[in-house]
Length: 166
Image 1 (cartoon, helix red, strand yellow):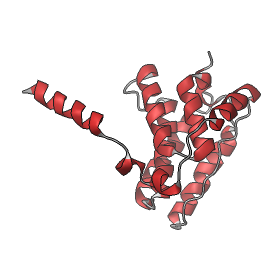
Image 2 (cartoon, rainbow, N blue to C red):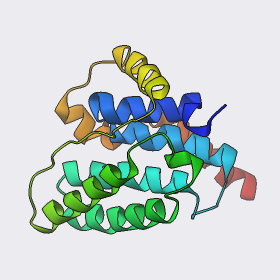
Image 3 (spheres, helix red, strand yellow):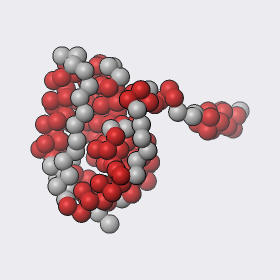
């Protein structure tokens, strides 16, 4: 299977192009990255994760955080331009969109969504089908998801780790 056809990467693309749920983009790709290249900060998946994180910050008007992480995303993805994790998209458009976003963020322009141009007809078809089943989300929820989500399992895991250390 091509690495961009992995179900978690499909979910990333669906969230990105479908409802611009960058928080979920980060979540699904982090899971994929942990399976493929754990702790490898130079892996292309980290660039994709950084991209989603940067756009999430921009939407929240955290211009400094957005700029910092988008610079890293652009560098990581540009370095991996010939990697299989970028094969089936329009990479020049992707890098241009990241760069334009950085310019807008520098000017403190309000967030503007954009889409990843998928050039593989097969991948595009799979992603389009995944978009159709995305749950509806409103702007407030997408903008503040890290505050609004149920974190009880995360807090429980942290507490269990803390107890196991003692």
